[in-house]
Length: 109
Length: 116
Image (tube, rainbow over all chains, first blue to last red; front, side, top):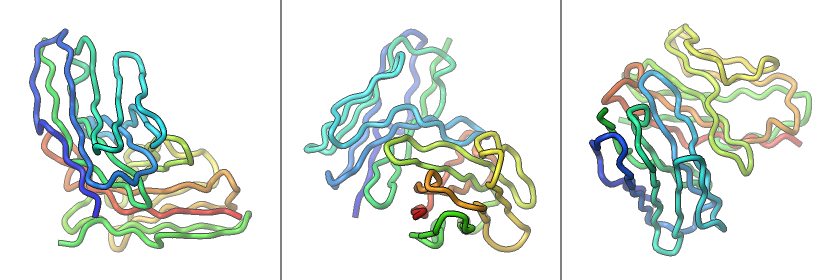
């Protein structure tokens, strides 16, 4: 059974810092991995989708990497801003979509 | 406490037919979200409902799609006159309140719709 773990559970950084969120999964047989952002009272927003054949995806200040063989993905956020404060979730898809518990990020002005 | 349940897990429809997807939230949860994942694309928000109310339907296609969450029973996502482009995985999630700080959305296993 696929298990997805995210570390750390919570992270607080000053504005402007670069930061890394980690996601690990136990079964490397995945179709893709996604990173999401969850804001209070809103649906999830998909940030980046990495297909199983890809190693990374970039969008603006975000960069996500995927190492399928070791069951790891990282989300790198450059030059963090207070508006980046949210919960970040990763999810792997292989017949079922499995989510991690999320990392709650707070970026202080 | 059973998790979010969706049924059917797989649904095959011919063009022009109707598809009904059901989502039973976790016990005690009164907020339901529906998402769609098209092949090769990321998950996209469709609609957010509370019991008997649609709160945010900004992600719903304007035609053929509707959603409800009645006082009793599961939430239903209904797609009328399906077309091949509706083929996707449809996920629902539930949360106990409005998904504010400390509330997590719990996802169901999804319904994979195939339109022939």
